[in-house]
Structures are given as structure tokens and as C-alpha cells.
Amino acid sequence: MGQHRIENLLLEKLPQPYRDSLLSRMEEVAVPTGTVLYEAEEAPRYAWFITSGLVSKIVSMSDGRSAEVGMCGNEGVVPAWHLLGGRSQGPARCVVQVELKALRMPFPELKTEMEVVPALRQLIQRCVHRRSMILSQIAACNRLHGAEERLARWLLTAQDLTGNNSVMLSQGFLADMLGSRRTTVTLAAGALRRRKLISYRRGQIQILDHRRLEDAACECYGTVSQLFENFYA
Ligand SMILES: [Zn+2]
Image 1 (cartoon, rainbow, N blue to C red):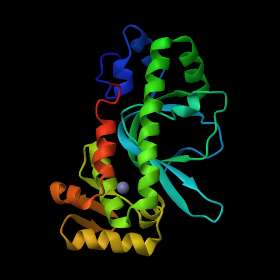
Image 2: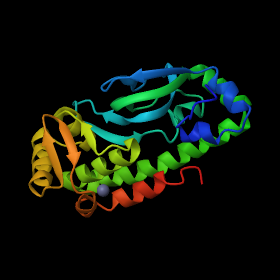
Image 3: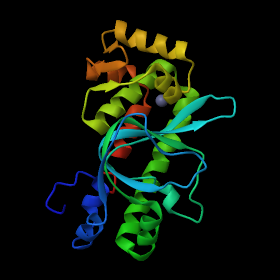
Image 4: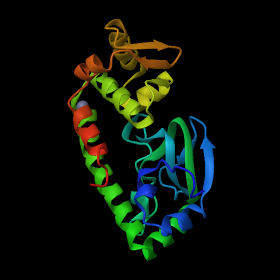
């Protein structure tokens, strides 16, 4: 496996020969869209190093409403903050939004590994640190910005993380991600489509004009994309 291009930023940062030793203990998997990698308030079974695709972290309230609080691609490990501290559960569940290719190992094994390998621990800490900054921005965005500009922000970030300008999404997923009613999401997608920024057919959303979609997105897109850049700087 050490011969392959890894295509996960955290793994690429690990020093050799330790990186190959860790890779030899991982399993390469493909994971379809809609799969739940871990549930809220349950200890994750695996730790995932995504090499392509996209996951969302979603928090649901007792009345059934949900909002997305994070997006992760190949920049790090999922979950990350569950690895720090004594408690391995959290309020968010993690759902595959764009089919994954990933390397995985049992979560408890990575947790033990991290405790004895400083280089790995340091990278995971940096990953948690950067993601918590992204989370702060998304928390404010969910509260302050409208569905249309948030949808634009989401689509642009999804493109940055997957390298693909087209994504297959159900309205239910979109509503969960944006923390809005389905009708609000339909209106937001319709408005972007009328302006010819995206096409939207049977759940397939394609970005038609990246630059103008950036203009339509809230300022959070720029902030979040800067935080994804030089992720371990
Ligand atoms: Zn925003």
C-alpha cells in the first residue's frame, strides 16, 4: 500500500517509516452515499481516513429538525475530536454525502496508537483545532445567513473537497444540511437555478458558474475555504 499515492492529507504528513506501518494495518474501503459512519452519542466503530468523497456532520434536535455542523473530505481523520479526551461520543452523527473511498482502522486501535505516537497525536490535534474553527464559522452562518447564500456556500465547499462540480443530493439531505424547511431549500435552489448559477434535476446539482456562485454565497465560503487551505500549517 505504501507504493500507492495516499491522497489523504493527514496520512501524507506522517513521517516514514511509521506511515507505512500504519497503512499496513488499515483496510481500503468504498462507502456509498447515505451511509452513517457513526451515530450521535455512540462510540464510533472505525476511524476513517477519506481519500475521496465527502461526509457531513449533522446534529438533530428532539423535534426532528437537523442542521449540518461540519463537512469533511480528505484533509484528515473522521472522527477527530472523539479521539481526544476520555469520552468517545458526541452530539453529531456523520453521514456520507458523496460516495467515499477511505482507509479505515478500528477506532479503539487508532485511539491507542495516538496515545503512543506523538507525530500522529500532533496531526490529529491540529485537525481538531482547524475543524473547530470551521465549526465556529458554520454555527454563526446557520444562525445569521439565508438559505440561498448558505446553499451556494455549501456547494462551493463540496466542490473544493471533492474536486467535482456536480453532486447528487436529495431534498431531505439538503434541508438537513441547511437546517431549513424543504420548501425553503426548494426556493433557494430554484433561485440559484433561475440565475443560471446551478442546474438542478432529480437531485443532481451542477455548478454552472463558479465565480458568480461565489458572489451569491455568504462570506463564510471564503473564511471556510481559507481554513481548509494549508490545513496543517
Ligand atoms: Zn454564512
